[in-house]
Image (cartoon, rainbow, N blue to C red; front, side, top):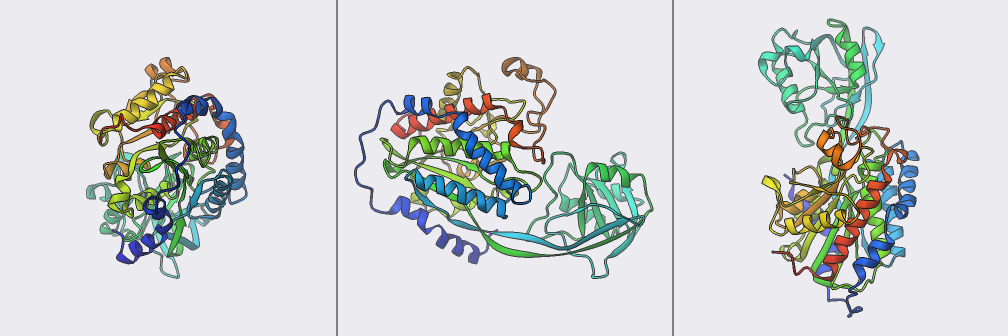
Length: 467
């Protein structure tokens, strides 16, 4: 739960955005253009996203290989997009939200006298200044996942436990290891998974680091080896920016909203995840312009800290007034639009994750416009894994588009969309290879057109939405 101080800071920071919806209405704009959708779809597409994707790749390369938030690559990305949007005539703001940041001051892991590359589990407690000296206990998958106390039977007291991530939380595994008398935990990461992280408020009971799958396999062959771990770090409270841009025309009582997260994971530049969503949204915003002939205002958002815990979008929705939340007619989320083995998924209006009333209308509008590009979309439910979640929880009709992540494409999906069955939609998901040259530009073009058409449709009228 956020502290009262954090909420107060955030409310103050959000003041500029709140003004976009509660200030006096703008002067009358041009009459709605009935041909807006046709024009916008014709003008937008993957070619217009390319300069923005190249810029995001360059900004990652210049800032340690990523655009993670908080971080300099993310800050540079916000500045780049904000400049483009101001040039296009939008009302632009960068409201902030508070996050906890973990800064590692010292990390050294040696096993059997050799230094091992490791990454601190974020918000891990520190070791004593002299470090932890222990023997290595290996908890192999055939002995259990480390999710039950019985899995730690036979773990030597005072040892450093090597175990695989998965099946239950890092906090649970670490707590059970501590109860078994361990002194530290070495987590073996799966390829393509984000780095291990404890809850920022509570941390964990033992110092913990993460290892690559290759390093983990090498250490698993050395049970009983001497281990020395030194880890020191601190938790800081800092402010991170979202980016919001709204048209100067259209009714502010029925705002059509779309968003995409702008941050990457720390492991790579995040060009598919989610440079593609961010660039497609920017391309659409540029082509639409800051003062289009619309009936409803259009608001674009680029979120920070999606890869952490959806912090940027969650804070935005939670700190809006009730009236301002009710003024949002719908929200459409863009997350990964050019996976190399692309799928065509639209979220909303199906099953247990169907979303608030009106979400099926949003999903159907997107799916119909994807069909116009020559592809049949698969409509799926919401699962809480991207920035639509706060809008869904607030009862705002929502939709989402994505081309797939680390999950494997089925034979049926390959028959429908092409590509390789039994292979991940994006084999570079959350990895350093998620770069510009891996993108499926056909998928990016189709999704960009479909989102452009959907936003233009609702910008003219939201009469077909059930609220």
